[in-house]
Length: 88
Length: 89
Image (cartoon, rainbow over all chains, first blue to last red; front, side):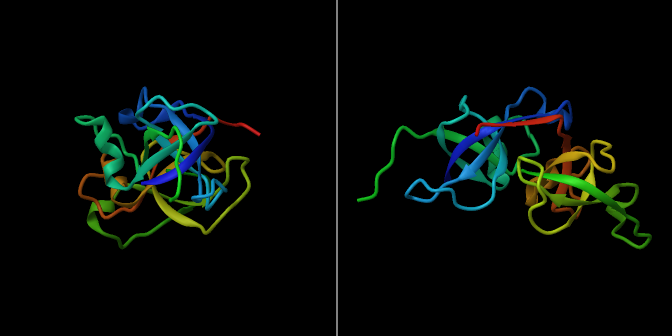
C-alpha cells in the first residue's frame, strides 16, 4: 500500500458497467515526509474519502477486492483514510 | 488507473486470436490538467472511445476484468471516457 493525498475527482459517464456508482478520485502519491512523490493516478474509493484528505491505497488486482463480490476493472483503490503517521 | 488522451489507432492483422475484433488505440498518459506526461501505450478499448478523448485506462492484470476481456492477453484497457477532472489547487 502507499500513502497519497486526494487531489480531485473524475467524472466519467461512459464507463465499464462494473464501475457504475463507484467514486473515482485523483491521487498524488506521497513520500514519508508528505511531499509529492511520483505521478498522479486515478483510484476507486472504498472508504468515503474526500478531496484534501491523506489516504492509503492498494495497487494491482487486489484493488477490486474491497468491492467483492463485484469485480470492477480497477488497479488502484483507496482502502483507508490516514489520521496521522509518524516515523520513529 | 491513469488518465490518458487517445492519439491514434493500431491496426494489426496478425494477432492473438483472443484479440480479434477488439479495438486497439494508442493513448498518451496525461496529468489531471491535461498535459502529456509519459510514454505512449496501446490499450484495448471497451467503451467505444474516440480520437482526442480523455479516457481512463486500467493497467496490469486488472485490465482483464474489463468488460469482455476475461482471459485475454491484455495489460491496458480503456474502461471510461472522462467528462471532467476537478482538481483542488
